[in-house]
Every structure is written in structure tokens, then in C-alpha cells.
Image (cartoon, rainbow over all chains, first blue to last red):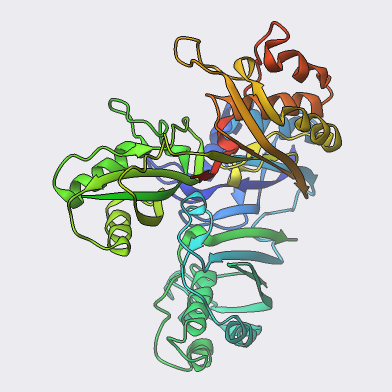
Amino acid sequence: MSNIKCIVSYNGTNFSGWQVQNDKRSVEGEIELALFKICKEEISIIGSGRTDKGVHSYGQTFNFKSNIEMKEEQWLKALNTNLPYDIRITNVEFVDDNFHSRFSCKGKTYQYILNQGDFDPIYKDIVYQYGKKLDIDKMIHAANMFIGKHDFQYFCSNSIDEVKDFVKEIYSFNIKEENNLIYFSVAGSGFLRYQVRMMVGTLIEIGANRKDETIISERLDKKGATTTSFNAPSNGLYLLKVEY
Amino acid sequence: MSNIKCIVSYNGTNFSGWQVQNDKRSVEGEIELALFKICKEEISIIGSGRTDKGVHSYGQTFNFKSNIEMKEEQWLKALNTNLPYDIRITNVEFVDDNFHSRFSCKGKTYQYILNQGDFDPIYKDIVYQYGKKLDIDKMIHAANMFIGKHDFQYFCSNSIDEVKDFVKEIYSFNIKEENNLIYFSVAGSGFLRYQVRMMVGTLIEIGANRKDETIISERLDKKGATTTSFNAPSNGLYLLKVEY
């Protein structure tokens, strides 16, 4: 029995998200369908975590077990042959039997891309078309406040029933500007639901001079009383890397 | 009666092309529908020419006439409010009564974008995912052969019934490489159907060492006997600019 680890890129536009949902097109569902075609049996895959509707990936990682004897490059080819073109497997690796895409995960990196220029229909599904100039220096300064271990309960949509521990560590949070585009890159131990989009959303509000950066210290570690309301749209978000 | 000239960007992915076709979603049809909503009457627009299914635009130009009294910026806003997000008007200008988007056209610039790297699902509809390294120097050299006035009958899909004159002038044909991407930019007096995609397709065959550059001199000005067979896919093609 091989334990097979795969890295997968996908364009999230035409998916209801990573997770299988009845009657809806999901990335996980399409991959399991491809595996069924290859293996002639139902195989469940384990993703490093979910991504929401519209979120893209260059680094999502999953694993599954199979008795079929194929080399890594044969799995890569078989999977891509049976997958739609908005999903591509970029790496296949046999791993230790104990490897588990979710439990073994040591960190993740996300990128968020925003266009300050005019609405661009060509990129409408893969870059958030914000359309106004943001104060990048203010955002860079504010982003540093997220770094370190913090309680992110006010920067997520998870309920207490769902998550025991809202403490996550942010390793780095970089922001750079190239022409009209702004690239946010955030690496951390793990992320709660909507956490990246709420952190980016908050930075956008600060960069737009709608909010002061104290809003971060007020919400971080539950020091204030309000949850973040502005969730930056999913189309600008990319899961770039999962670390093990 | 105002004569109104508009520049329009669109993502061609979900259109059957520029031209209205029964039951199919076309860019022209969507714009005429938006005008109907604004003007409460049927208005026909005149495009600078057609673009095929899947072809994108940052520069397509059209004009129409209307008695409605609105300023340029009001037309821009009214149109974009009534258009789907894969079409955006980027400029509106009142022009001389004689201006005609097709007949007044003095030249066009197209861009073609190709990815030599691994198939990228995020960009699958807006960059041709070729997936192999091409010899850029060979292509740059060969592209120069297109420059000047030539008969392009063997580089188009038009029939003699449809087009009287296959002679077109190419002003410039530039190719540059950035990381794994190749950008072809071609400017000319006008282009026949599939001409840009057939010229780019021929350059790809040369860059891949599948054909020698003499294939261009053989087909140009109908010196040989064969029409170009490889039509580079529409998803990499952009109408960048229409000159008047």
C-alpha cells in the first residue's frame, strides 16, 4: 500500500470550493472522480484543509493510499489525463505511511492579489478588482501587527463549537506593489476560515483610510468586542504553499 | 444626433465571439442589449471588425449613433452599469459624424501570449498553455519576414468570395520573452480572418524546430501551394489597439 502525496494547482472560479458537496462541482470531488477512473474503486483523498469557493491554488496538497503499482510520474500522468483543465497535479511523491496532509502540516503560505487600477475583465476571476489607490506604507506597517502568536477569533468565521483553539502564529506578512497590482503574502502555522481574507480586508480598510490601524490591536487577541466585517473577495486569494 | 466612439475590453472566454449569432452569447449582442436598456430602443453598433470565439480585447472599438443627450462620462457609466463584468467600456468619445469604426480604421495591433512552462490552470483561458521551450531567436528572425505589404491568402481562412484583396501591410512584429512567457506583438494595416493566429502558429512551428523559416516565404504572396494549417489557439490572442 503506497501513501501518495500530491500538489495541485487549480483555478477556483468554477468550483464550489475544495470540499465535496452534493450536486456541486468541487476540486476534491473531481480528483476523487479521476482516481475512480484510474483505480476502479472509490478512494478518499485527504486535503491539507479546505479552500472556499473561488479561491485558487498553486500549492494545495493532498494524499491518498492505493495498492496500485505505478511510479510517481505515472500517477502524475494518469491523474492529469483524467482531470479537467482547471485542475492540474504538479507533483506526486511517495511518502511515509504516517504522512497525513492535514495533521502533518507545519505551515501554509497564501497570496492575495489586488488591482488598484480600472476593472480588468480579463483578470476579473483571478485578481480582486478593487479599483482605487491604497496607501501601501500604511498597510505594510499595519500588517506587521499580525506577526507572532495571536488569538484570531475576531478574524475568522469559525464558531467556538467548531474550533477549540483560535491561536495561530503568523510567521511573515509581506506586501509589495507592482504597477497597479498589490501582492499580499502571508505565511503562518495554519489559518482559520476566512482568516486571510479578513486580515487582507482589514488592511484594505486601513490602506483606504477608512479605518485606523488600531482596529487590528483592538480585534487581535479578542481585546475589543467586534469581529472583522470586511472579507476580501475570494477571487484574489491563492493557496501558494503547504509546508511539512 | 451624436456619433459615439467606445473602446471596450473583454474576456472572450464565455463569448461565441464579437458578432451577434442566434442564441449565442456575443460581445456585440451584450453591448446592444445594454444600449437597449439605456435608450429604450434598438441600436446597432459598428465594430472595427470581428474577433473570434475566445479572443480577448483591450482595444476593440465600436461606434453608434444616438439622440440621447448625455455626456461622455455618463455614457461610460451607463454602459458599464448595464454590461456584464466580462465586458468593460474603457473610453467614450464623441466623434465626427463621418467616423465609422470599420471604414475609418487605419491599423490594428494584436498581442499573443504563450506559456512555455507547465500547464497553468489559473491562466488557461487567457494564455495559450503551450508547455514547451521555443527557440525565440529563430522566431524573431522569421517574424521579420512578415513585415511589409504581402498577399496573406495562405495565412487566412477567408474565401475569395468573401475578400477581394488579400494584400495587407504588417508594420511591426515583435517578440519578447519574460520568464516562461512569450509575447508576440503585431501591428498592421488590417488582418484577415485567423491571420494573426496563423502567423503565430507558423512561428511556433519554426520555434519548435518542426518547420524551417522558408515555410513563410513559400506561403507569403502565394508563392507556394499550401495554406497554413496550424492556427494558434484563440485563448492567447488579444486585440490591443485600433488606430484611426
